[in-house]
Amino acid sequence: MRADVDKLCRHLGYRFIDPQLIEQALTHRSVGGKNNERLEYLGDAILGFVIADALYHHFLDATEGQLSRLRSSLVKQDTLAEVAREFKLGDYLHLGHGELRSGGQSRDSILADGVEAILAAIYLDGGYQATREVIQRIFTPRLNKLNLEAHQKDPKTQLQEYLQASRISLPSYEIANVSGDPHDQLFRVICFVTELDKKTIGQGSSRRKAEQDAASQMLAILRHD
Image 1 (cartoon, rainbow, N blue to C red):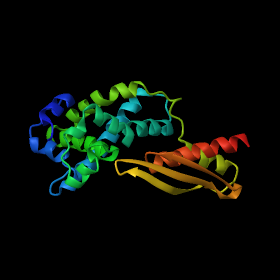
Image 2: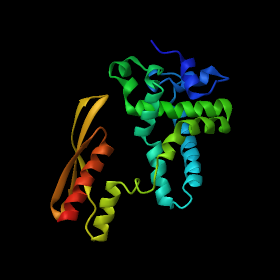
Image 3: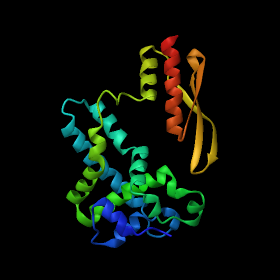
Image 4: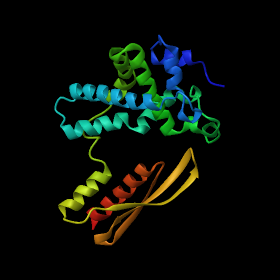
C-alpha cells in the first residue's frame, strides 16, 4: 500500500494546488496511462538550470569544465537516487505489477526519474520560483560540501587524454557479463587499449561505473609502466 502523499509534500516543503500533478509525477510508465515520463524530461532541464545557476554564483573562479563536472556530480542518477531515499520516495511510487515484483521501488533509475518528475510537477503547479526554492532546500547542503579539487576529470576522460597525448589509439569498452537481480545488478566491463596490448576489467552497479573502474585501473597501469 502506498504511503500518504501529503507526508511527502510536507517533506518537500511544497503544497500542491493541483494534486493530480504530484500523482502523475509518482506514476511510473509501467502503470500505463498518464505517467511521469514527460515530467522527467522537463524536471531534468529545470534541475540542470537551477544547479548551474547556483554553481556559477558559488564558485566564482571555476572554469567551465570545472562547473560542468560539479553540476554532473549533483544531478547524476546516484545523487538523485540518494535524494529520493532521504524522502523514502519508493514508498510513494505507483508502479506496475512487474516493476513491483522486480523491486523497482528501490531501483536507482526509477527513483532518480521520480525526483525529476516531482520537480517538474512543482514547476507546472507553482512556477519557477517555487521549484527553485525546493531545489535549493534539497541541494544546498550538498553544494556546500563540494570543492574544485575533489571533482577532477573522471577516469575515462583522464585515460582518453593520456592516450591522446601519447598519440595512442583511444580505448574501447566491452561488457563481459551482467549478474544479479534486475534491481541489484553487477556489471563487469573490459577496457582494451589494443595498441599497447593491455586490458583491465572493472565492475560496478551500472555500466558507467564499471567502465570508470576499468579506466581507472588502466590509468594506474600505464602511469606505472
